[in-house]
Length: 211
Image (cartoon, rainbow, N blue to C red):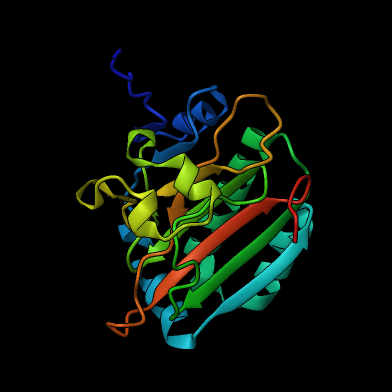
C-alpha cells in the first residue's frame, strides 16, 4: 500500500508578511509569533477591568468605537496594536467589513476541535494560553465531519499544537472561497478548571460570516 504523504498545512514566521501565506492552497493556518512585552501594562489593566468590546462595520467605525470605549491615553499601546492588526487583516482579506471581539474570557468557549463556518478568522491571545490547533496529518476528517468526540478526531494527542501568547493566528474557515480548501481544525484552551483568564482578540470578515 502506498504511504500517504503528509501535507504541511501551516506556516509560522516572525514578520507580518507571513500572514499572506494563508492564501496558499495547502495552508489553512498561519501564525506570526511576536513579542508583546511593551503591551503588558495595558493588558494587565484590561484584565483587571474585565474589559469587553464588540463591534461590527468598517475599520474606521470599529476604531472610533474602540477609542471611545478605552477613553484614556494610557491605553494608546493596545489601541495602536489593535489598529495595526485590523488594518493588516483588511489587506490580507481584501475585505472592508469586520466583526470584532476584544474581551476578557474566563470560560473554555469552544471546548471541542472544530472548523469555523466563515472564510478567514484572526485570533490573538494577549493574555493567557493560546489557541490549540492540529496539523493535517493529525486529523481524522471523517470523524470530524461526523461530529465525533476529540478522541476520535485527533490521531495523536501528544502532537496537538498551541499558539503562543501574543501571536497573531489566521485560520481558514469552511467557506473560504477557493476549491479544494480544507478548513483549519482548532479549539479554545481549557481555562475554567484552573480559574485562568484570557484577553482574546477575534476578528472575522463580515463578507462570508454565518452568525
